[in-house]
Length: 321
View 1 (spheres, rainbow, N blue to C red):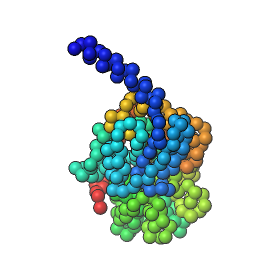
View 2: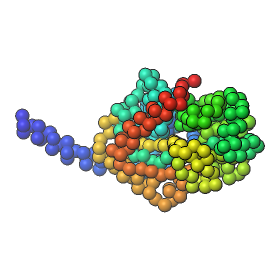
View 3: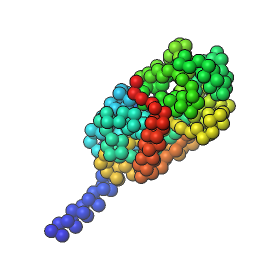
View 4: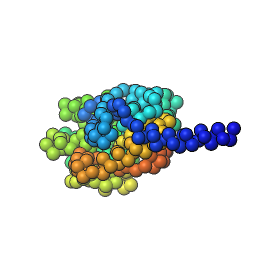
C-alpha cells in the first residue's frame, strides 16, 4: 500500500511540470465582466494580445456583461480548471458584491476561483460637464448641501466601485444625491454628456481623452495620490476629506482547482507583460496604476479587500436599488 502511495505521489509531482509544458494547445478565452469600451475591456485587450503572443495560442477577450458581474463569474466558476477559461474580474465582482448582495450570490470569490495575478488599480474621478457651477471639491460639497436630493450621480451599476464611492461620499460629507445606476460605464458617460446627470463617478481611464478635449471636467480623484494621467486634478483627500482613499482594481482569476503549474506560468507571463515599458506607458497614460504580484499575494489581497469593502458598504448604507 505504501509503495502504491509513493508511486502515485511521484506521478503527480512529475505530471505537474508536464502540464505546464504542454499548455496551451488551443485558444484561451479571457472573459471580461463588462461591455466593450470600459476600463476592464482596455486592460483585458492589452493583456490578451500579448499573452497570446507569449503562449503561442490566441487569447480572446470575451465580453460577458450582466447582473453586476454574476454572468461572467458563473461562466468562469463552472468552466473546467484547465487554463482555457480565465476571467478579468473587478473589485465589485470580487469584493463588493459579497456584502451588497449578501445571500444572493451564486459564487464565492474566495473559493470558486484560483487567483492568478493582480493587474492594476484605478482611481475614480468626480466628473462633470464644463458648465457645472462648482469648480472645486469644497464648492461641490457646499453646492450639493444647498440642494439636498436634487443632484444625481451615475454609476456603472449597483454594486460597482462608482456606486460605493458615491455612497461613501454622501456619508462622509453629509450631502444627499440620487444614485442612477447604468448597465456599464459607457451608458453612464453618455447620460452625463447628454446632461441627464449632474455627476458621474468615472474610472480615470474612461475620461482622460474627454478631459483633455474639454468635453468634461474632473473635480477630484478618489485615490490617496493624484493620477499621473490627470496630474492637475487634486485628490478628495487633499480637498477636504483627509484619509479618503479608494480605488477600483482588476485581477485575472481562473476556475477553482487550476493546476499550480499553469497558474504559475500565467502569472509569470502577465507580470512580465505588465512590466514592459510599452504596456506601462500605455496603462499609466490611460490612468491605470499597474500593481501585480504572486497568486498567493492576490489571494490575501482579495481577502483583505472583502473585509474593507464590507465595512465601507455597511458604513455607507449602500443598497441594491
